Length: 138
Image (cartoon, rainbow, N blue to C red; front, side):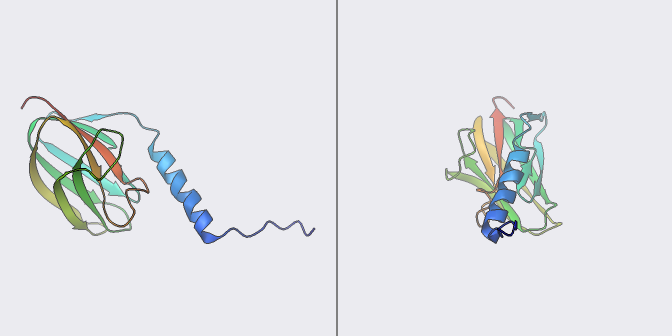
């Protein structure tokens, strides 16, 4: 035996790196509670911050800054808080290029739990998902 370590396929290395990024984003269980009607989000490669936000009911203004190296967008979908996507889309912010700002958009959401997700390629699968809780009341 030569003692050499076999080369790993690039796909395996990328999968491990993506999983590490997802797990790194899972460590924070804190919720960003906002008492006004403006939500400012940051998109990185591959996460949305804050990971969980709580806002009062009523009209909400959303602004997203892309600090990543890739293009992202933002969709607000119906959700159960478990990070699953594919529900009814309430609003979207289209393509946000690196260093750019998307929005503002204004949307009125009934009280409940929503999923914030980048729908570009497979970014949701790589961790570009956050939770938005809309509390009752204005």
